[in-house]
Image (cartoon, rainbow, N blue to C red; front, top):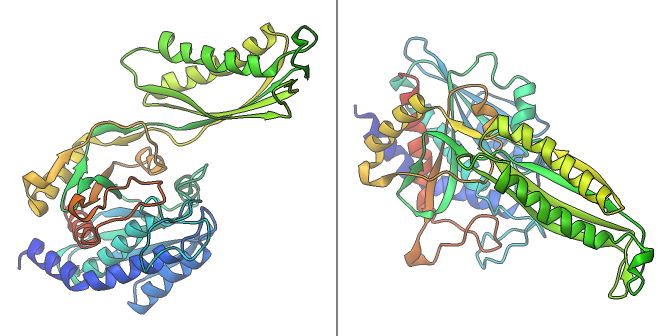
Length: 397
C-alpha cells in the first residue's frame, strides 16, 4: 500500500464533508474565549465518528487522541484554532456569517475543518503507523493571553508529552495547491502598549495656561521611534506602531485634560524585547514630565516570537515535497505578524506552515482580517490530507 496515494484518495472522498463542516463553522463564528457552540459542534462530530476526546480545555477547547495500530511509538501534536474576529462579513455567499459583527476572517474555520478531516484520514490509516497523535482544537488565538498559553498551563502538552507539534494556517497570497514554510525564526513577538497622557486642559488660545496633552502625545509618538531607529541593533527586526489616539474631551478651541494612545511593539529577539520594554516606558514617562504633564503606561506582554525548529522543519519540508511536489513547496520570508502558536514552539520542536488558499482566476485574493476574506475550498482537501501525512511521517522521524 502507498501511504500518499491512500491519503489523497481518502481526502478526495471526504472533501464534500469537510466543505460542509467549514461552511457550518463559517456561518456560526464565535469570538475568542466565547466558542461554546463551536466546541460542542466539534465534540458532536468526534462522537459521531467515535473519536476519543476530552473537552473543557481553556473552557471551550477539545483534545482528540488517535492511536496507531503498529507497535508503540512517540506522540506528536496537531493544532487548529477555533475562534473568529469582530468583523462584519461583506461576502455574498450562501454560507455568510449569521452572527452579526463576527466573522471567520482569519481562516480558523478552515483550520478546524481541515483538522477534523485529517482525523478522519488518520482513523482509516491506523495500520500505517504506531504511536499517538494528539489533535488540539484551541480557543482564543486572537486575544491575549492566547488560548495556547492557557492550554499549556492546563497540561495539554503532558500525559503524553508530544515530541513535536504542527500548526497549519491559511495564506491567501499563495495559490491553492501550494504550501509555504520557513525554518528558524519566522514570526514576531507582539506586545500591546496603552498610554494615558495627563495634563491641564483649557482654551486653545491660551496655551500658556495649559499643559497641552495633544502636543505631549505627538512628542511621545515621534520620540519613541528613535528607540527603534537608534537604540536597536539594525540586524534585529523590530517595529513600533501606534494605531489609535483618543482625546478625553477637546475641540478646535479646547485643549483636553487627557489623551489616550494605543500601539504595538514587535520583534524577533527576546533579549532586545525586554530591553525595549524598559526604554519605551522610560521614554514615555520622561517625555511627558519634561513638558509638564504625566503619563501612565500599561505595556501588556503578548505572544513570544515563533520559531520553527530547524532540524524538524527540514524533515517536514522534505515530507511536504514528497506529498505535493517540489514546485508546490515554497520558502516564506520572515513576517512581523504574531501567532499564539509561538507558545507551543517555546515548549517542543514545532513547525508552523502556510496553506495556499488563493485563486486569482476566481477572484479569491482578499487578505486575512478583511470583510471579504474567503478561500478556494479545494484547499480543504489539500490541508486535511497533507496534515495527516505529515503527522504520520513525524512519528517516524
